[in-house]
Image (cartoon, rainbow, N blue to C red):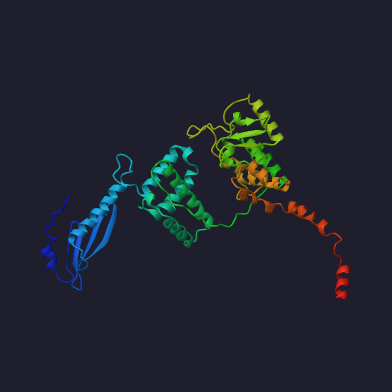
Length: 394
């Protein structure tokens, strides 16, 4: 519907003097120092301010052209609202969608884990940076700017990568839930690998004894599974008794990090688990159930607090020895035993061979023994006397 202009009329525009201007219905006509008439628009569309110079009268621009420019912007906004959920008039901003995302995974843990860390990333970093931007309009360039800004502030590459991982999960879920139709690529930066901590035989024994002595009756079981398989913390607490195949020495993991897989277990661990199962009356259900009334799941979500108690009781450093250290220890022992990398990958459940190769530098003794076999290729072929003789002959 066309506007009726009472101030921004053609006669009024012709009578404007240098430096004067008239504004009406989002259109401004201003007389420049050269005597030309410049048209600009300043409107709000879907909560966004659009301020553009349309052009000059000497270029053939008229008030009607400025009206057309406004209609073009509003038409684009209407087209952009075609995929909005029913009942919504505007696209959600980054902050609004992030809030909805956090609420959804809080009420449905299957949609995401590490909620507190994600909430911290959004509240302190991601929302203050992206603010009112639309998630469906985020670009690779905008995300690269975020990374550069964080690094300039002094954040470590590993820290920025964790924040980008949260952003990536948010966009993946938004795409899955049809909140957005496309998502940008997220390029993570290179980071210095962390030092891999492993336990020697004495430390493992001390930790096991401390776990057995802990007031939590499930801690020793968590510890022997971690040391005997190298499974991830989250994978262990989600094991059910019916998932354990004692004779086949396998644990079925329907929700492993790299997808569903069969976890091989050593004979001694299979025997230990069967004895525990028999003593408990051959139950079904979780190995690590929870009795908390306010729990969001029937099984434990973490054993970190109990594990820390055992680490301290064993005389180890809780700042360095975490549940993941048991995974590092188990995988490193496989490397030192000379097990081939593809087999280790099957046991560890890593997505790629490259991730397993991180552990090979820890087995220097094993590498030295392997390289020692090359001595046979040079044994007796060159001697100082023969080399010296050749030198004199020359």
